[in-house]
Image (tube, rainbow, N blue to C red; front, side, top):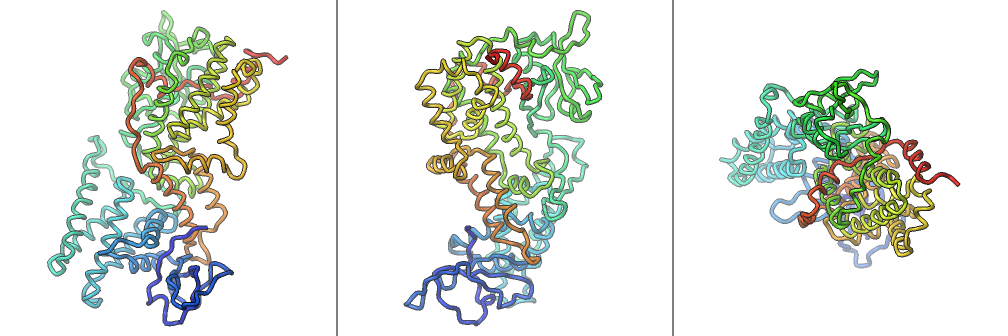
Length: 567
């Protein structure tokens, strides 16, 4: 298990002579700062005969109270020189995971207490201490970007500490650089405050704390008007089109997408919300489709209009009987590239904090994990899409072509380092309702079967997904990981280790979680090269963006047995 190493200041270490080991010591930091709370990390260690090992003063912060961990972190910061790797890691660990053990308001108050006043301290240390606090705040806001821009406690804290710097800059001119930095930060937060794009939101108070310490998950506030989500528009009881749209999207815009998707005249269709009790309500063209659907806790359906304008639902698979298999006419590389571009837009929007909230929240994803939830939903829908396309194809020869097509798309996704869609496609081909199609698989050429076997080997879960982990590690960034496995890793660390040890924060556990979450940065070190599919397939983007899937396993099995009855 890794841990964030940082050198313990002499004031904390005391005068006790320490034996020389080539492994670090643990340090438990609590309010009493007891000197006897030391324990070696390893039972085996090798003494350095020279007696002055470079590692003799390296220690690992294992547990402590939030206030003492913060105090230790500030004392270890270096301002002029670059941070050593251990201190940099400790700082990042703390900022990434503080919401687990303290609220944003707690951190703001603790930082204000650490910001020194001249009359309290020796003048020579005052400016240095001030700059360390300001450096930490700068790193904090840089890491979280707009994640905290609606937090009232942070807004007030930034104003307070900015006023403190304004008061101090005349006596400590060295703070001028920090003052300019805070002017930029305050400008950013002010912009978020006033530019909410909607007049009716100007007088609303946004109040929420990004903390998991109390009730594990605080509500993140009302939906942002620019926020995007996947809207499910059901064609039949078990099949829907997934539409990625903003919450301000009108019913008419949604209907246009659906009409193109199912190849049906738009003027002959209507959007209808159906509540769980069976109550129906037709949406008008200018209605906000997503808001209406959520308000009534209902499903959104597309119905047909007859000559008398009465609404009739599609019968199961009726709208698909004459459906052409459009995917066969689309270039395979282009299709994989569009899948990758779409997945990248979702993956790149995920904030590292979303993984923390997803792991520690007892209620699941909710509002603080919106972008992460979109990518997870997309992975599930791509898997269903593969099965749906194959099982809705009644002609054997075309079905064989489809399976070959998906095998090639999976290979291209791997080549494009999109492991999220790669896994989803392979799992879709391995769905029980597809894998049982013996007539189809018998006609797949040997080279495609061999390729598929090679691709399948990467999804082998044995030895904790060693095949996937080894292959993914060798891939250069940018790359898109298989997110469910990354979440499984974080959850495993969380459930296998206590968050608090004797009322002290188990910081080694938080380091392991932060280290796993940081893998997102490595994946996003570079941006994809903005390669675009060829223009000959103008329908490619809407086809990939709005997948038509059947989300009922029983319905998929019925289709499977219909096209290839059991012998």
